[in-house]
Image (cartoon, rainbow, N blue to C red; front, top):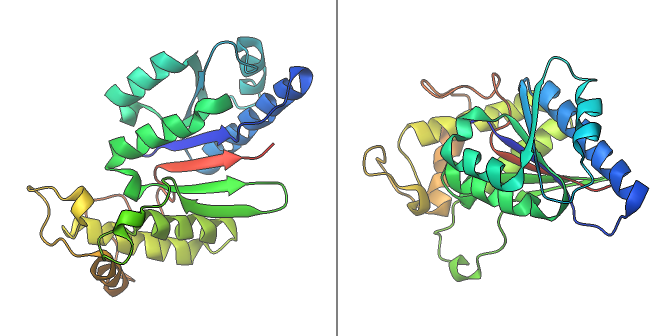
Length: 231
């Protein structure tokens, strides 16, 4: 699945300021879709929401190359859970962005696979979608994939695309070779189940390789991203 979740950080904007924030978020989401070559954008909206049908249609009109749809939050969540491959970019205004991003991460295989970027006007921060896991600290059991892919996102953000693709392809080749941490073990495909360090070492040894069956990173640079925009 190639899925990017774009949402804003919850804030106290009201009235016209709230609508301007929704418009800016939507323009950003369409720009992300165009930049990543994803031809589908859906907005999941709660009721009431500043992202009205009129505003959505007006902004979507600036991006005729991208198919766009606006749906209620509950309907969007149901379809996302049923057919995640049917989406490209999902924009979620308001307070439910983290909920949708976490669901998408679970559909992809778990929150240990999902990177995140918080993009502001003056700075950007890259991390995992999930929070901390103190129960795993020092036990060599955590899946480092989300943090690794957050680094890939950061490399793209600063223009180091070839380096980012090299790391991403090595990670894809590792997954493809059946090397999986305990949280994503699958009896039908897992060959080895190393800890955090062992998985990282496996990725390092595959630098310079590309996946054989999975789509290489250069074709689709970002997978399952959760992008938060600060208004």
